[in-house]
Amino acid sequence: MGEKDMIGNSMQTAAERVLTAAGIAALAILVVLLVVAWSSDRDHLDALSRTWRWLNLFAAGLVVALGIDLLPDFADETEWMHRADEVAIEVVASLAIVWYAGRRRRLARSLAPLGLVVIGEVVKLFAIPIEWRDTADVQGDVVLAALGVPVVAVLAVIYSRIWRRSGAPGEAALTTPDGWCRASE
Image: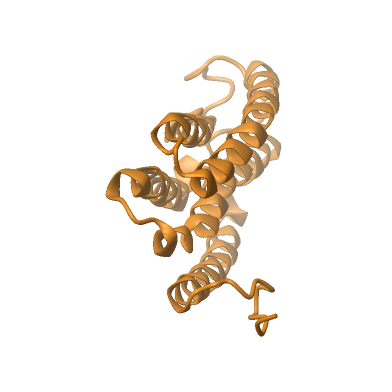
């Protein structure tokens, strides 16, 4: 039996280990950036914007975590068509990071993070028939798709409940003139 690497899988190639290390480094950098961003939000928080900040972070974070998790898969894929779903997830994860980096967006009432999670799920669902003949690739896609459907459903329910509680978009009682969310009176 081969020597186990840092992840515990003796079958990992050098390229997979490099991509795993890059993913871990990216995650560490994102955590530092998140701490810095959240400390700058203190002056703009009320109950409603705090709720949206957490919910938007959770949804965007799911996509980013999936993107980081799929980085080592680039080393395994042999055909570009089979890499398409990983590339698409990396693009969606990058969009989630860029979207969440904007203070007004991360504190605001928005369906964009939920939309990014849905796009990620649709990408994995479309990958299943494309990679059907490659058993190793399709297994991961099936698992991610099977886990993603209930996650999307639960997120949709949570978003809809909070969305209804926070009022209509642009409602004067919930939004300050410069676009910040505030609790209804």
